[in-house]
Length: 288
Ligand SMILES: [Zn+2]
View 1 (cartoon, rainbow, N blue to C red):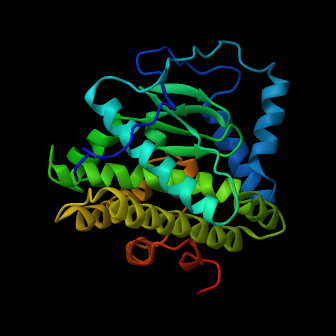
View 2: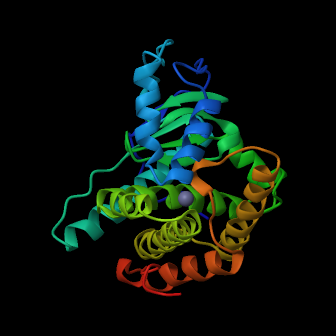
View 3: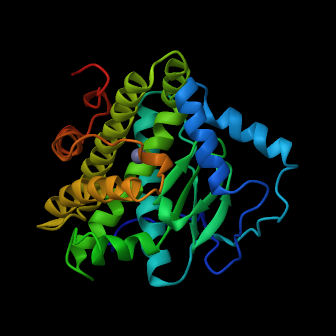
């Protein structure tokens, strides 16, 4: 992909290099509470919020990083992708008579605090609906290249795969501000786990489709996609799924991805959004 024309965002908070140790509650607590939440159909966020109160909140204050446009190569890349999502979704919302409030994206290294609890690199990138921020440890990008083999190391097509990952998380923000995430969470409270998981798959596939909508509209505006890019992103979608399943088997829990759907489903929905460029095509809830 070509970065050249993409607008930059000044909504990147750079926490790389800042200490981000566990505060009031650690990831272990979050994981346990999340599992309890799923088992009993309670929104895990409520439990996590309760635990934070119980443990007196954060004991170590998370240092805030500078907010703006980072000047290093990775930071500029992230800022350009984020900037393109801001313009695309501002347009889409405006056409629907709505106002898009873009999220802040937090770049961190190793570990940091999020509104949804302690975040660490092993979790992969995620969106926290409570503080409405995207969390990205950029070592995940290196993983994409080196460990997942999702694209050729250092290649331009690899960049598009990384952009797709950011666009997927922004897709969750869009779902959140449109009220879909809260609705799903409410519905899940009354569901058995299998049913709840199947609903979660539809949330994830819709975020893939919304990433496709972004790619379509960003391409129309800036012609930034190059040959091989889309194939690379599709490969990434399935590679991430596989790897995340592996991580689960190894005992890591990835809050963003209790389940993401099959590779074929992910490919199908990203392609649907990419071809149509329309949010209406992303009705992952109305199909089997
Ligand atoms: Zn997701």
